[in-house]
Length: 374
Image (tube, rainbow, N blue to C red; front, side):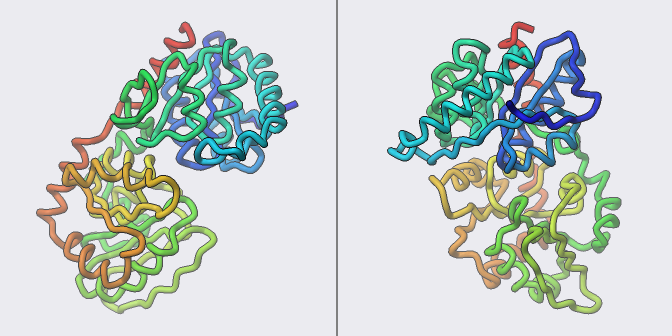
């Protein structure tokens, strides 16, 4: 039997459709699922949204905190591509599918929405032939779970054109309203005060995902003197398991290291330029808020991070640096001149803002409610 983790009264059963979202594991899967959940509840306040997850995922913290119930199922570890390893998982898959099916029956699911990853695959297999399925793929290169789910999904939604999933509809990535409704200019003074940043200095935001990125940490902190000499303030989220020691330069704009950014809306508002990875969620957020970026794609996997960032680069909204090429010298050579060039920053910001899908959450919510017969 799955173990339910309770949220708040917002998720109490109503008389409307029951939507089950499967997006556990990483923030890149969970956040779009929660943004969709919020949009469903705005459109249908009588709906019930329940999330699927596993004991080891970030969803254990994020889902209840946003007010939704979480049902835990056994994880199914997935290879990135179809391999013989997948054939050695039949018992784990069968057990997870059986327990997921029990959850779907017990909650009376009207639709299952999957966002990929090791929670989505058992959800797709459990729902097949029983409950309508909607698949959302954030990356241009779809993962194994979504390739499987798309074969028998009622609707397939994708973030960007050019995926190989059948019958795909381009909707963008569902984002939190605190991001899509963000007015960076109006919030800038408050944001910089919140983080202890110089109110007037051009400001660089540095982050590498929820766990940080050591290569980005080393390159940017190593260029602290160059940044200070150019009058650039820095807000640097280095990751909760990493440490960052940065030399202070009296009289210069502050270099503010933090383990984690709880308020990404304020971080985006405080910044003029970001240097970051190019996961699908990150690219969607920085373009949505109109923040110029220097993308440093994660150098593993099937190259999806470079693919994610390429449209923004081509549109003039971002630059891209390979992880192997990133160094303090590269930051001084490439990033410092960008952050201090107000005209260039303004042009890149306008290009970024023109790319976003700010209504992706409600667009996908309407697709989901249609699939549920609601």
